[in-house]
Amino acid sequence: QVQLVESGGGLVQPGGSLRLSCAASGTILSINTMGWYRQAPGKERELAATLTSGGNTNYADSVKGRFTISRDDAKNTVYLQMDSLKPEDTASYYCNAWITAPWKGTSNYWGQGTQVTVSS
Image (cartoon, rainbow, N blue to C red; front, top):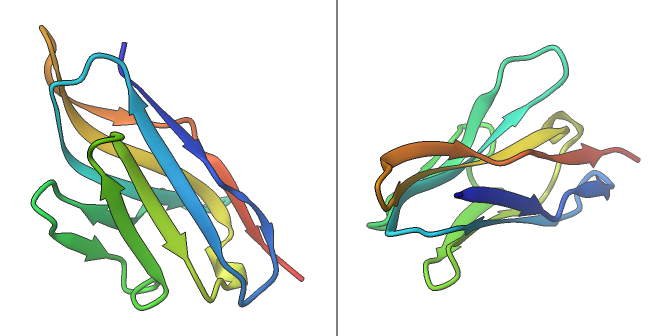
């Protein structure tokens, strides 16, 4: 059973930093694109950042220059370093990954979400 488990959310003051982590567990053959999405109350879920297995990144305009996505393939883990946080970054952050597993082929997986609150 493949699972994504996030950690690292919390409460931070404007201008502060947080680092989110997401680890994939289970029997995994390979992981292609990994990414982070976020959903604020009353809004639709939106992309924050993605990173392919080849190293290509994609960032939402609203986080460019402030957020950095990275991954450790040996640990099946993706990270999101968030700096210069703003109140409008407050949201639930969800990990997402395209994972190939034995007998299941390639499927899209979501984590359970971790809350990030930016407030003074």
